[in-house]
Every structure is written in C-alpha cells, then in structure tokens.
Length: 445
Ligand code: P5A
Image (cartoon, rainbow, N blue to C red; front, side, top):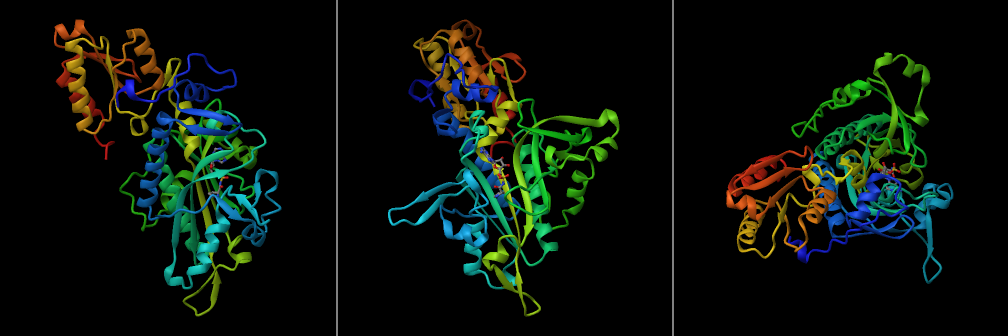
C-alpha cells in the first residue's frame, strides 16, 4: 500500500478521553473512530489488525477440531425466555421491538441460539461430540464502557459451544479449548495465564479466564510466578489424544481472579513466587453441563437406547479487545510495537526524498519485491519531512522500517530499523529485503 493513497487519519493531539496507552495510540494511529460510548468504526489500519487476530483465532479453532458457522446478531426473546435468562440478564441486554411488536434483542452471547440449532438437527450420540463456533459482533450495554475497544458496548467475540453425551466427554471438549487458547494467544506474542474464574451470567462451576498481566487491566489477579512465561503445547499437539496432563500442568499452580481468590491457598505459594497484579481478560471458558440444554430440551439418544440431555460448554475470546490488549502489552512512548503475527503491514518503506529519481527507484523496487514475498509493505511515498515520517512510522508500529535517503544511496545502502529494539543496520537494498523476509519465516502462511 502506498501511504499517499491510503486512508490513515492520524491525530496529532491525544484525545483527553483516552486514559490508557492502547486507547490513545489506537485513536492517534487512525485505527478506530468512536461514534457513541463503546461503539466504534474500525478504520482501515485497525480493521487490518482485527482481521489478522480473527484469522489466528480461526486457524487455532479449526486445528482443535471446532467448526465455523455464523449466527445472527439479532435474536428472538423467546429463546431467552425458554432458557430462563431473559429477565436475569438485566439492563446489559439491548432489547428491541420490531414493527409487529415482536420482542428481539441484540445478542450479548449465543448459548440459546446454538442450543436451538442443535436441538433442531441432532438426535443421536453418534453425532457427538460437536464443537461449533462463530466470530460475530455482540452488544452489551455495559454500565461503564471504557478504555476504548477493551470494554466496548459493541465488540467482536469468537464464541465456541460444545455438546457432549456426558460430563466426562464435556471436560474433554473443555480441555481442547483450554489447549487451543494457550496456542492462540502465544501466536500473538502474549503470555496468557489461565486462572480459576467466576462464571457470572453464563453459569456452571468449571471455568477459566485467560489473563494477560498489565497495569491498566481491569481485574485484580493472583498467581504463581512460574505460570508466567511457560512454554505452550504448540501446533503439533494431538487434539484427539488425552489433553488432561497438559491442562493439569497449567492448573496445578495457584492462579485465580479476584472473585475466586482464596487468601489461605495463596499463602501456601512461596513468598517470592506470589504474583498479585492487574490483568486483562482476553478469553473465558465455561463448562456448565445442562444449564441450557435441560430447559430447552436438547437431548440425544444414547448408546443405551435412552434419551440423554446433552452436556455443554462455551468458550469466548475477545477478538476486538485483543487489539487493545496486544498494544497494552507491546508499546513504548513513541507508539505501538506490533508483534509480527498481527502487524497491519509487514514493513514500512520511508522515502526521504520522494520525487528524487534515485530514491524513488530504490523504494519502488523494495516495494515490489517485499510485496511479491507476501510482506505487504506500507510505502511512505509522501512529500513530508523525515522527522514527520519517522514519528508516524513509530506511532503505527510496523516491526521494520527501511529508510531510503539520497546520502545512503550514494554508498549503495539503506537503513533498516527494528521497531522493537531500535536497532539500526546499514544494508544494501538486497540485504534489506532478505533480512525482512527471514524475520517472517514461520509467521507468514
Ligand atoms: C463464552 C462464549 C461468554 O460470553 N459465552 C459465549 C461466554 N463469556 S464472556 O466472558 O462474557 O465473554 C467472552 C470474552 O469476550 C470479551 N468481552 C468483551 N470485549 C470487549 N468489550 C466488552 N464489553 C466485552 N465483554 C466481554 C472478553 O475477552 C471475554 O473474555
């Protein structure tokens, strides 16, 4: 993409409403535009990152055996009356009436809708287990939408639902998602710690929140230090094998959110290993058995010839929240530092003298070659001063910058800056292309 043709409305001033770094940088870098409390447009740069995050989530769900579908945002109130949640959900639910007086709602989550799908089609234990998911917008009329996309009212969630013949099998599905989540977040460069969590309006008593530590996090959390920086199972894990040992290895050490915190148990953790910190909840998984399937009549015929109410779980990832979460985990005073896997563009090319025959030629060549290699470069071909270009590129946080100026070109060199470390290397244009391609080995698919 050529910057001169892109839609990148950067802000010079930091909006006063933005309290945390990710919100400030997302506004300044032209990633989102707020229309109303907690309701945003995703501008091209923000949309690119959102899509990349959703793609990683999707790949890891598919790898774990979950199957993608799409459910509506608008749901009939009757389904929620059947499950018994219509009144319980309270003011957080946006209730809508259509022209014929039918009660509808903008879905805050989809347990009821998918249970309705399931009961309409599945009759036999032979069709179990089922793991189905979608990536869809949700609406929750939060009391306090804040921190930009971190606590929005309209937000993008990946939600998976599992259906099993009994509780033992339901825990196997739960474990699949547990392991898939470890891999998903690690691919985004995040250290997510699963913590025992409260289940709130979703229900059940087996539940973990996936938390990344950040000073600006909304939850207070407590965990054993050894859980930080643990290796993840990785893409070779066999999702049809026994995942319990992998889950046990992660749950043996103390980790709990504020609601589930047990001060006595935490006191057993050696003092130098006790971490009490703030965290951002980027995912939440639940096993709630028959909470929805029983009142809604989701049953299958079992191998014993009798009807069994299916045992369910649901598994959420805050896809739009992750955009903010990743920035909280990876930025400096100058701007965002994108992890390679989710960066909106693979590298920036800065032409320090746009219009000059030599710099133009080298930049065009770099642009074509990086593009052909799948790096998706952003070429700053604008006529601005160098200082403007440098700070703009630092703000939007692309992992690598190739700076092309007339002085360097006289010696046949360009400067490659690595955003994260600030390291600068003088390389020939050829070497610069090869260096950047090498950095993306194993990340570009
Ligand atoms: C699990 C999937 C559920 O809704 N039902 C379907 C279950 N869980 S949850 O914990 O309530 O939400 C799942 C994840 O969604 C993100 N999230 C939000 N993101 C942005 N703004 C919000 N207001 C918001 N609320 C929830 C979180 O990442 C949460 O873990």
